[in-house]
Length: 245
Image 1 (cartoon, helix red, strand yellow):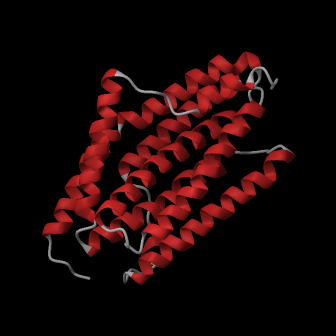
Image 2 (cartoon, one colour):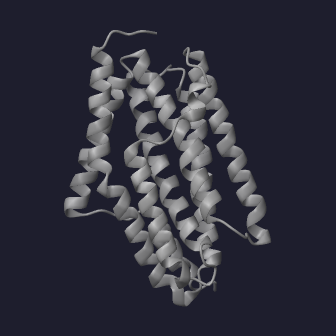
């Protein structure tokens, strides 16, 4: 990667500016998920569900992608990736502790899997990675970091929304320090993924990277409204059901 070509790759890595229908869709998703968060925080079961979602996301989604897609790593990546995975494991322990503090045993979490929508999204990302593998000199490393980048950017959006809502409705909520700390780590992970892509992608591979990132992000958007409505429905149900905590 040459110094002159790195700004192009950085632009590709930055979250795209949305217009028209895509912008309207993003606004809907944000509004629905804010409403879902309010409903989930209205019950102990809802809060535990939120923590399980975070825990499973940290434990199963991105870590699974890294383990399955990343094979041989250049020396310059080893320490970065090890630090990244160390922080992910710290997040797992922190969310597990928060669940235990709310009366949930971690034994139940060890068999937990991502929900159907998340599994479908991961499968589609895997298909994209293997389809583009031969397009890059660094093979699966580039698709893996592209997926990791988009997953981390999605995580930061989720955490920022959650933090802003809690700051409005419950500024002293005990989950706020944990979410703020995890958000700070995820921000570094975004930078690590984009920095890796800048070093891994050759100039003649830039347009292919741009196309692949567009497909990865389209998969994320394709499930966004359905996922948001599902979360809102679950939040409403948990709020209406008798609290068994």
